[in-house]
Amino acid sequence: MSQNILFLAHVSEAGNTLPKASYAVLGAALKLSRQLGTRLTIGLIGGDVSAAAETVAAAGADRILAVAGPDFSGARYASDAAAAEAICRSAGADLILAPATSRFMRVLAGVAHRLTGCVDTHVTSLEAVDGGVRATRWHYRQRIEGVIRRDTRPWIVLLESGCHAAFIGTPGAAQVEQIPVALPKVATRTVITGIRAPKSEVQTIRPDASLLFVAGAGWTKKQADGKTHVDQAETLILDFLRVSGASLGGSKSLVDQTGESQAVLGFMTHLNQVGQTGSTPRHPKGLSTCCHGEEPHVVGWRFINERHAVNLDPNCGWARGKADVLYVADAFEVLAKLNVLLAQRNRTSPEPAAHGALVN
Ligand SMILES: Cc1cc2nc3c(=O)[nH]c(=O)nc-3n(C[C@H](O)[C@H](O)[C@H](O)COP(=O)(O)OP(=O)(O)OC[C@H]3O[C@@H](n4cnc5c(N)ncnc54)[C@H](O)[C@@H]3O)c2cc1C
Image 1 (cartoon, protein in one colour):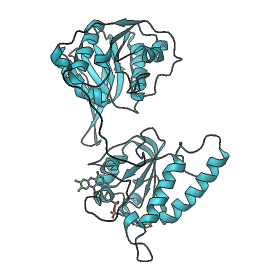
Image 2 (cartoon, rainbow, N blue to C red):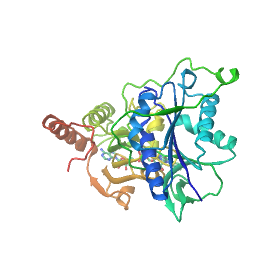
Image 3 (tube, rainbow, N blue to C red):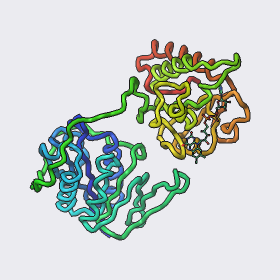
Image 4 (spheres, helix red, strand yellow):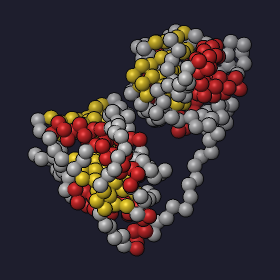
């Protein structure tokens, strides 16, 4: 079965590049088109795609198609669906690969329907097998891996971020074919008038960090002196995030305390929760502190490659084979020491923090 591949992307909010996850999808699309010996088309949607097109020019696609203009700058179902449909039809692609951004997650299932094709979301890998394509995705909170092969074409696949090496190419001149799309008036009636986001003093969720730092309810529990030390916990954790560049996760018990009006860490929200009813982030390393390591929590660690934990209890859940290294220690003391060491290293290293590497 022939597999003309279309890599479909929208420009980032800043407008001069594509969202980071898109370059990983382009990397996957290039690999697949080489393996299958098929043509690759790039399709771009946005207010002005010229700068973004230059960032993918070196990919060597057969064609770069675009639907561009003020009507296509922001996320909106009607205009995004019309743009994606027009690009897919013009490309005549059998396989359409797109990043699982919130903008595309809302729209591409509808586009598949318009094209009488099919769609799969949350795909984590794509492989060429026997001249065809095999996709995988996780089910039941990352416990079961499903393998998908489909005969229906076109097949739209939304790839999760962090699952493939990103395409890196020197930006260059790009020849872009503009696809005209005339939107009916009804397709432009939804207008974004502003964005309301939860107030956060600190940006704690950093999907690109090398380290995921997870705090558990132990940080707010009575310590050896019979008292809680929440203020100290806040300072230690915020200092650690600053000097390490880590992303912050929380256990359900800790984030739930906000709703129960107990003393809590002010910067911890439900968005930080990792686990079965939380998120499943992807980071090379993870450090859990004051968290027991129970199964529904550990599910959120499914894609953390190297797991370290600090717990006072040598019989905590982490001790049962769920962490690569368990430090039986007081997390308050460990973090205070780590912060000093990392601050020292940052002073001497030309590339401070941000790598989130654990101190060996
Ligand atoms: C259906 C279902 C879904 C769930 N989904 C999730 C989920 O998505 N995410 C999630 O996290 N949980 C989830 N849970 C809850 C989960 O089972 C655990 O109850 C929860 O994760 C426990 O949080 P914790 O380890 O922070 O708190 P605790 O169990 O209270 O553990 C606190 C730990 O801190 C340690 N500690 C205290 N002081 C220190 C110190 N100074 N130094 C070092 N260690 C110290 C203690 O030894 C203790 O082990 C779910 C449960 C159910 C039933």
